[in-house]
Image 1 (tube, rainbow, N blue to C red):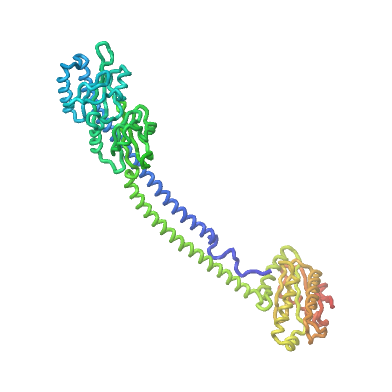
Image 2 (cartoon, rainbow, N blue to C red):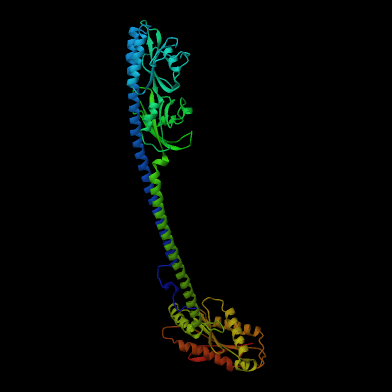
Length: 523
């Protein structure tokens, strides 16, 4: 039963185990890195939302300004049409009044820069009067949408129609028209003011937008009237982003949404505002990339700094983990060295059996345990017969092999973990048997004796011709008054009796009435 010199449970470091320390260090480093990344993410996300919210406010202000300007533009044109419609319906537009009307049309156009021209058409859609000096002689406008609208609707309010090319000179215009009735309320014709699309283009250009930005004026159904940048192919078509109206705030006629544009695939923040007096809507869009340009720079710089910090922490952690692992390795090596030293200090290097130092410590422990539990303790002392002759005959190397063979026999016969086989000195061995009575010790001794014989080790100096051993046994129940030295002496006395009784036998010594009785068992 090997008894270590040092208790491994009290190794340097105490309760601070290396493996939990390594796990704790790795967990701490990972947690710090994750916290830094999470902090960076939340800070950047908050900054991103702030930039988008600021852009939404700016877009809302822009669309309100656009809506106000557009409404003023159409109100001015509508007022001109209203005053002219009252005059025409009172005085008519016969040949006598036409020169005067033409001059009035021309003056009104000159006073409002947004007007392309004023036009009067009869109930058949034929040209009657225009603000231009020469009257257009081409086909009428009976096919125009605005003319059909007034022809079919009795309403006298202004109508804003889809953008068209003027048949007067081919310019793009937005028609604002009114129905004219005769004295009986019958359809008499249409009075139309053409608003220059270039006027809105100039107005849109007065705002500072990014290269991917957009501004537009459209009918409430999404039909495009004017746009920056100008694209003739889109005029008159429904806005690709008309579903932004779904994001309107109730009661405001306004809203915004971040949408990927269908024509060019650019993601933009679209804001829109409906005009109060006319079925029109203005939209302004800024590209998300332009809105977040500053944020992207900040995000890159912050991410780079955090990445460097995380890299530094990871490098420090890597060095720390290596140091911990090196410490583990050194500690393991020290533990192995300590175990090796313990083995050297407590075991015989030739036979691998316990030495006298370990034997004495084991005796101290087993004496105390036997005394507490009142359990028997046995000791077998054995000696190789005629070992000096064996060494003289076969040499010390063969003698060492002989000792090793006997040690293997002892190891093979001691099956219990508590049994301790010892090289007592020279060719003398001992076996300590806790919780074992004398019969049990003698049985084991006889097994050892026969096992040595069964090895068939040639020994020409022995009377039997083979290597044999002599064994002495002693057993008793220890008490606090008993001496370890006396216990060993009695087992040694039994061995002495076995050797002097002819060797190759087992002898037992027990104390009865102060006399020594010797029992022998030979081959």
